[in-house]
Length: 208
Length: 208
Image 1 (cartoon, rainbow over the protein chains, first blue to last red):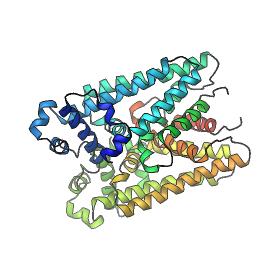
Image 2: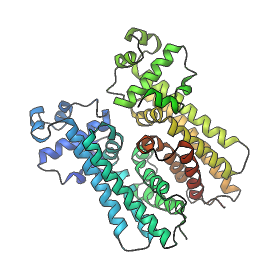
Image 3: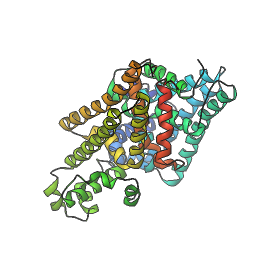
Image 4: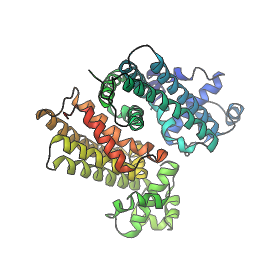
């Protein structure tokens, strides 16, 4: 997957908070390398080389390869949480907020699929402390979606048999967009976002 | 992920068609190694070592590491197709057949999640010919599910806006079970199969 493709998907923008520039370049290089070859097959030398830097220059910014993965995963999960929280806390009915959450989350996974794949598939490569921190962020993401579904049940908009299971399925459907999106090419991220918002409203039995 | 855990999930049974025994042991070792460290970080020496064999013994059965991945992927996809085809071609209404397809496919992804992860996430590691063959099997899987949905529309059981998009979403939801299943532990494969069958019938607007 090329850098140009990622930039088109809006990925590069997401790393704006990483400074200085050298630290950001290394992070982007690490995402590409992990996505292409996997975390375990990537060395810090590979990452430095992709960023046009020396291994010594890398160690100024990141002590270990795991620190890079941890930082990528934390930024990715914080962004995911921000997207879901924004949709959850906006004005509107539960149906509108759920459609917004799903549409935004899907567009983000389609556009930023390289990062999303690294973040989702290399979770087991994190050490125990980093993993615990990321799992806490994931529980917060889950709580935002569950909150919208519970609001919709309370207001009589939704008809749901298993709130926890349905929450999990909604998030799972959105996350898996990162796996298949580049394989297809039949839809734009916006089209998939709209399709999935409709499918999820059906899953929660939203009154039409 | 331990071998015992996989066996509990029914994974080992799936390789019964691989003979002789040494070839099967090597295949199981390859699945475990690829799932744990990724395809690119795994050497044929690692695989032979896990199987308690020498690298020379491995080469009697598999000429390259890619041949192992190709064989794993082909067997996995043929099994997926068989599951979907069986559900698609049984007697019953479209709703019953779709619920059966989703339930079986989910149980298989939950139970055989290690293999499913390798098969799903290492698709880009296959060479062009192997990849083309696997993509053809994936299109057949897609066609089985699409066929049930089209039958349900024709019979008036289902109300679907986008048949291709809904087919993709149904398969995606089932496949992603392999990613999250071992992280949770709240549900059995049967429970997830039943929950997902209900959610998918809602997605296709099945009349109750």
